[in-house]
Image 1 (tube, rainbow, N blue to C red):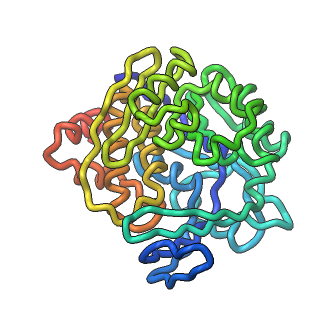
Image 2 (tube, helix red, strand yellow):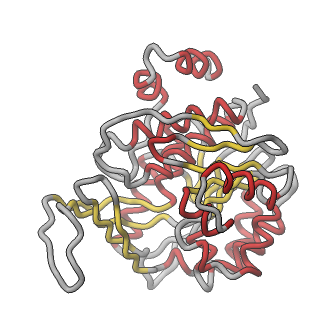
Length: 326
């Protein structure tokens, strides 16, 4: 157990609108399929912020947002979840959106249209720095690092963060498209990197989860921890300066895997922020992600009450309840 941070999760990423379509299977190239259900939801970095906020960690959105129906929707959903804004909206351009196709196996496939969230400036980075306070944790997404405009701005922001600010990176599926001069300084400053198996393979060239987690931790050095998310198999955790650990997942019937990695990341950050040790925080994140995939929609991370109910009878529930004062 460590001391609570008394800080906030500050996400310098992208909150966008998802057009989620449930289909039996992806159509063949040039084909078509009929969606059984279609919904607009706020997604992207919103999912991480929501997962953390629902577990009691204060949160701020420090990304760009636009003027228009999608920007309005993002701001309304952030406000509903009690998540504050750092930057003013960009006039004349709307927030972007993503089409997410979810098949009967719960897998999702994306196509994204960029908007205001991809137009960060150095003035925005300066505003984010001014808004930070001791104990804050900053989350960076590989999506933003891959954007031609945002990548250099975010790398500059990370390089200027005060030492007391912990930095968390989710490399994302576009990690192999991030310029080395952008990715390298961010990796050098990170306190934690959380990725899935595909992203770990792209970063290390190793398909084996255990070997990839160990190799990534070696590359990053002893100050940086690694989480390699493996869906139902749980995760591989390498605490800063430690050895790889396998923390088993929880078997559930998946309804929608969209946002599961975000639920894991947000829960891990929230539990770390509450002062839990990395192993307990990662075990709690495994449970939060398992809960999330049993619900439709991208922002399905549990509240603390829902997480404790999901863990009813599990020793982890008692540990979380004791640590969080419930």
